[in-house]
Image (tube, one colour):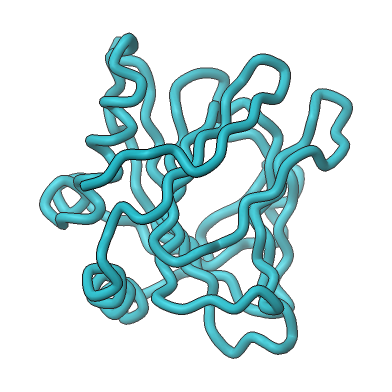
Length: 184
């Protein structure tokens, strides 16, 4: 697995690190096929204030994240990149977003690392779906496009919002969210 950083950005001293070309197109396609067939439920909310607007998601058992090659490599890379911190995987789920869905800016946690794997096997620039990161003044500051097989690692307290696909897109935007927290 190649581990070169494609992009890096900092907001308020908190890092966003993006990795590309970690996996082959065949690996990306196989995982996408698996994730596309999962049973999704309206179970996720971006913030407690927006609990009236639930998002489609599928929770994954932790053993699946450590037993599926690409998912395991994402977790391993996050732990390796933040080797100075002892991180424990606490939760893994797949977001399933379609045109017309609503996503709200939110923070994941006060500490730890969020890893976000962009799981679509194909994505066109005109389909949108970028993840938007906001600065400390809640202004959009940085954007990560949902390139197939891309992995973004970021501090979970950075305000961010998952983008929804444009009307031109007939695919669901699939992302795997890994929540790693310091060992207690």
